[in-house]
Amino acid sequence: MIPRYSRPEMVAIWEPQTRFRIWFEIEAHATDKLAELGVVPKEAAATIWAKAKDATFDVARIDEIERVTKHDVIAFLTHLAEIVGPEARFVHQGMTSSDVLDTTLAVQLARAADLLIADVDALLAAIKRRAFEHKLTPTIGRSHGIHAEPVTFGLKLAQAYAEFDRCRARLVAARIEIATCAISGAVGTFANIDPQVEEYVAEKMGLTPEPVSTQVIPRDRHAMFFATLGVVASSVERLATEIRHLQRTEVYEAEEYFSPGQKGSSAMPHKRNPVLTENLTGLARLVRGMVTPALENVALWHERDISHSSVERMIGPDATVTLDFALARLTGVIDKLLIYPQNMRKNLDKLGGLHNSQRVLLALTQAGASREDSYSMVQRNAMRTWEHGEDFLTNLKADKDVTAKLSVAQLEAMFDEGYHFKHVDTIFRRVFGEA
Image 1 (cartoon, rainbow, N blue to C red):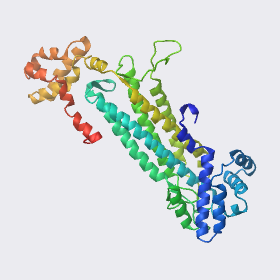
Image 2 (image 1 turned 90 degrees about the horizontal axis):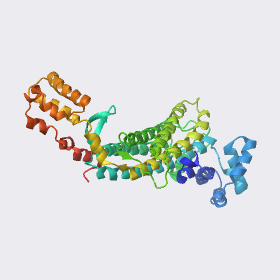
Image 3 (image 1 turned 90 degrees about the vertical axis):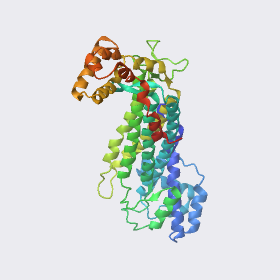
Image 4 (image 1 turned 135 degrees about the horizontal axis):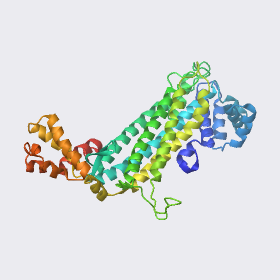
């Protein structure tokens, strides 16, 4: 988590002051409910809020105490006692450290998910705008990197929209799954604290009670959360890679915006490199790299161990901050993407109409030729076109076996480009709805 790839709002979720504020709120809400249940004095609960509600916690002081105690929650509670006074003895009644730590992590990840969902919403809006802008802009579709059949640039973007719409749904589901609260005591039995306290804290913190928490919230929830971030990152990379390919000099159908004064190379002044999408590819690798440790955190010993703790202290901030930055960067790339329909047309026409080969193949079979013979007829003309740079339709017209089955007029009709785009509206309705 470095400033170069960070945005302030997401970073703020993981700052020590934010974490200690959430710790305090959990402890104070729990004390409120304990007071209502008659376990602690109501006056003590009121004093805790009065003295610490607006306090700025001294991070350096907490760190100083922790260097002695070697325990972060105890260090915080000791510092809280310095602020609150004697009534602080009623804080943390019947609770264990993980009640605070796990519930806090749930709050942080839920807040992070909210930002990521908003990021995806912004990206979807940008993709949709550009998709409709180029709904019928013809371009060549490629399989294996080789010319296949025509598509439109709008359809390429519609595919990206549908993918990120699925990403949004996954993030919403991941937020629901991770937003659970555990205030259940040392091994999750509620032996020293009433389950009503957990329910109350959950409501106050915008969470739901964890059905069974041993000493910790089960880590399958966290594994699913980070796996979801990994999938979103992969979708970021897929779209970034498409743009990188389209920006290659030999293709040059689209290009990242190159701002005035921008430099592409320290050695070659002519360079305009796809640096943003290359950066997105790298950031996606980082986010995916944090998925495996989250999966390995699921298998803890008995009611808990702390092998997961060091992992989550790192991947929690790093994965969410990195993906937040990547989504925002990708939105900017799409919003300002330079698109070159004239180069799309040039590339589409580059192979002399070979992209119509399937339609001719199907027409020959419908005219009575076997599929094997039809394929042979079309392929020999296609290979001649490919190898000698000739015109595919001209070669077909000169092939007596072909013209024995299809008239010149029928062959010419096979090269109507609109044929390939007759269902674009249908696809757009499926992706974007009737509007």
